[in-house]
Image (cartoon, rainbow, N blue to C red; front, side):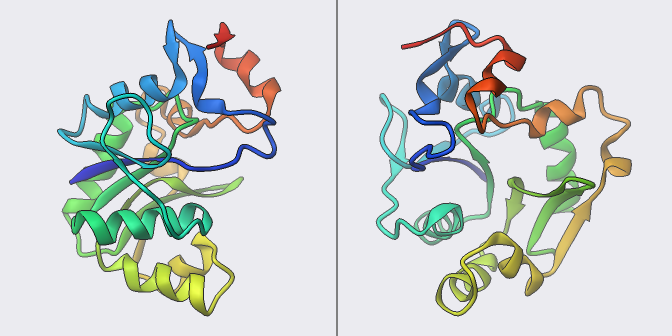
Length: 188
């Protein structure tokens, strides 16, 4: 199992590159990778290179769905996918989701809360490639359309509520005001 960090977006809503904002004395993307390494032996960026981290170029440039599909194709392994703007990942939440994923025969394990689905804090099997490809070529290019065709274990708030700070794991930075919530210090 490999963790992937999508790092190819243009940050339109945010207005500048989110991954370089400093959080806990280092750029946000380094916090994300550091937290993932507590659970995974291998963490791979998908999109732009950053420092010495292993990276897969996303030559499709078809958004997050394309990035996850490229990673599954290149790595030929199941993946846990997150965005570079998720600095509060909780390793125990990821480990719980991993246990759900490995104990079944699903194509994906994805959280679905009252605010919607969370496809960038999810496990995907290599079988998802066909669903992602369909979504890009025939559908609307969304996670939703790909997941509608797949065998998915949906996790609700009820499944995760016994885990401390579980909701923080799904937090991502979308707009500059989100930085205030996590105490971002500066841009590097």
